[in-house]
Image (cartoon, protein in one colour):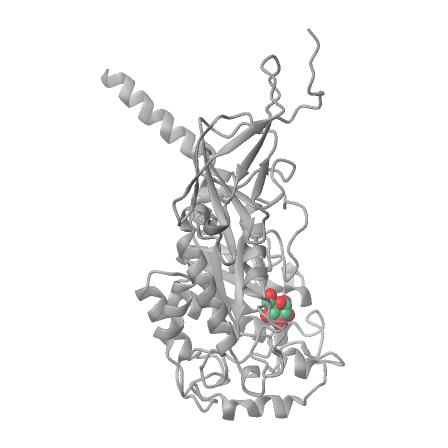
Length: 448
Ligand code: GLC
């Protein structure tokens, strides 16, 4: 008996070692453990806050593309007052929306840092009217409320005199031609990252702007190991060259299910990342919830963006969207969090998720559904169907089932109008075992 136990322990240790690859990179087993919270989280809130929030213009790109001079762009420091900034309210709003994590721009491409960086003085404490380390104040609240923390960091720093690129028409130098100068920049960027990792130990790094240089020039392996030394479980998005931990499609919901099991759609509520007074082209609550359910149905996360104003207030339209989302996520949480991707669209013409044990199938039904829900090719028997967050038990009918064939009939679920949610109704279909789908090519009628 004792030998059996010892042998089991030894075997477990061997398996554990075998799981580490020769180069010390994360094995697949390690990766799924590290990624678990991210997989379960489903919803995150992205925050674009910086100098651009003052005039309400494109983040960094407005001067890069020549719509405003760099000088005038930088003058926005005077309007970056953060005078109505209440990070505890931001975090409360984010948490109530149902988001489990948040990603904030610590520094965008223009180089203005939201924390008291020792590298230069282009930051919210030393060169803005705010005179505050707004990032630290935010992180404190995020930690207090138990949300996961993501830090966005732009690799390019277009304002820094020793960075290569300045505007679209003006490149200062080439990294290869002036290695000393390039090293000066590397020192700044890697030093800042070290500050962020030492100060905040983020759960996730959201890099951006890697297109301007090669992996070699950015010194990606060195940067990765520096961050992972501090926190081996830190997740890194796929914008630090090479393959990061997860893909980051931007704005466009993927049409076919991504092959990478880890992905996150980042999306604006209107057409702008940062605050833009003139942009009222907001998506409706129905559209956002529709996209969100499509995302989780395909195994991804949604990172929904807000753009606070220079004084720290969050535009009312954005507050309302987050509140509306919160009502819906709170009512339907069992169908959202800690679920896995749903079934192929041939079986149900809409978004679906599955409980982790794969024994409950959740159907997301648009509120204008006309009373009858159709499920095709489901081999399981159904134990019970109920309306999530509302409780009504629903009956179903099976059509086209003949006793001598294992082809499952088509299941019709009656959906009375009084159970409909104002945005999206969710049905829980409890199965008699793990979901079992008929995927055969054959015809319904089998010979003999
Ligand atoms: C793009 C843009 C940047 C924005 C980001 C968000 O990379 O350059 O302005 O912050 O997308 O995903």
